[in-house]
Length: 73
Image 1 (tube, rainbow, N blue to C red):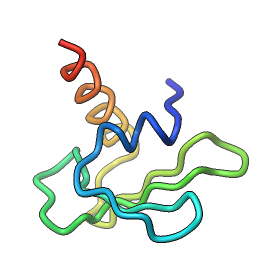
Image 2 (image 1 turned 30 degrees about the vertical axis):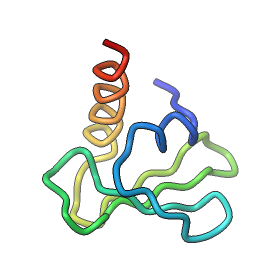
Image 3 (image 1 turned 90 degrees about the vertical axis):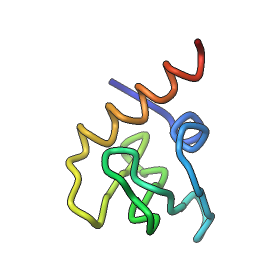
């Protein structure tokens, strides 16, 4: 599944820019209160996601995608 940076950011909470095409946000894969998710546009991939609380990339991506689907309803 491919997801671009803008779509990911639209489906995340507490987004803050920390550099050029680099952001932090609350991780949607766990009950995050500290914005532990790093989000960036990759040079060879569309999106880089890293949860510093240890969430798996697939779980983060699934939570972002589910949140976007729920907003469309």
